[in-house]
Length: 187
Image (spheres, rainbow, N blue to C red):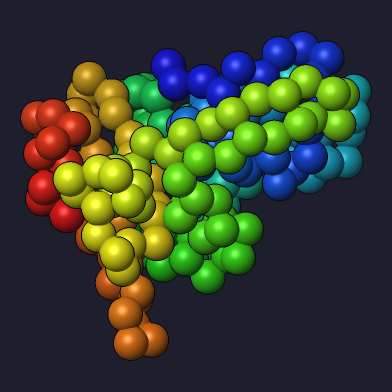
């Protein structure tokens, strides 16, 4: 599992947690956000982390349904494999088109690296896993604006990428690439 090295007692802003999810693919950050937002949405600070994450996932599925995602079901906030957790290329394109409209997501999706100081004083640095936005990468594409890499044994190496030129945004999805080079070269 990719993590951002967030530990119990660390205090981060939501903005930092979003950066932690998008740059190093911090699954730990995804769970912190899901638990925190789940408690807020449930209007119940006393529910366990597991209950809060489950509540968040139910709300994710409701949101997906409201936005026309008909081939997806979410059971966890980090995308780790579960037979009941799945999506389609079509649905991922809808999710991505919503993501590029969010200023905070877009800001971090195109950030190559970031050093942060948590509200609790700890320092951390994260590097983006998307080679398309790294100027030193052989896969660098000057119009790339993000979005997100992902990997599971079942799904292979995946990449949802976005680029902007002349006021137009183009989104491309690569699923089940055999290796890192393949997912970036295919974009």
